[in-house]
Length: 253
Image (cartoon, rainbow, N blue to C red; front, side):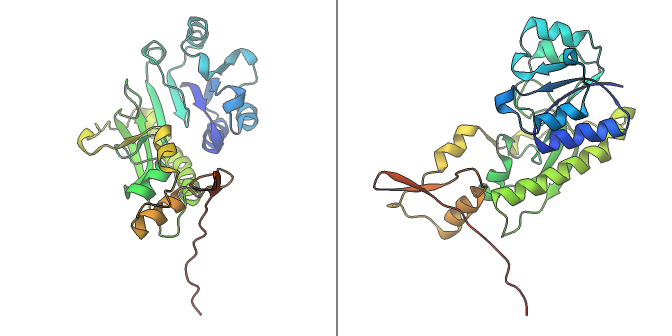
């Protein structure tokens, strides 16, 4: 099966590296533009070296890019932490569809920063493989794996858990995808939650004159603890002071 790979970040690198180890036929790679890439060099080292088969994800709407990808005759497209919306003219290029690996147990936490919202809102955490349709993380589910959110988890530690489980879920499910043996499960839109990047920005400032429940404030602080990102803050004398939590279980003697 001929694969077009769209990816970013450590998970994208690990999935592509694994596909190459399995001798799968990756005919092209789509990356974020250089200023938005994470693990870009590692991904490039794992994918095709022909520059004509490496594409800028911000240009997938351009006719020239669509035509170039069409010539690859890929059967399927795989999206892993890829941050650009895919248009119908792109998705129509792949007879086996476009599959996305999302770090949340859909329909919970569609969109951005699922690791943060699982802590703040108490929604389940996990990862999902699903088909991409014309919505944002709304397509039919192929496979899922939940992840336990512990009281000591921060946004960072939960994110790292989700990364590891995402790679493992893909490796487990890929043989079924390749064989055409997956069962498509529609999402339950009635319980869906969704967030955009600006939703995080809206909660980051802690009002020193406002009353918070202790649990809510602690969850906000730990969800936004992810160095080197700045996270939650208070403002004193016109200056922002950023806050992080360190949480550890009591050591038993």
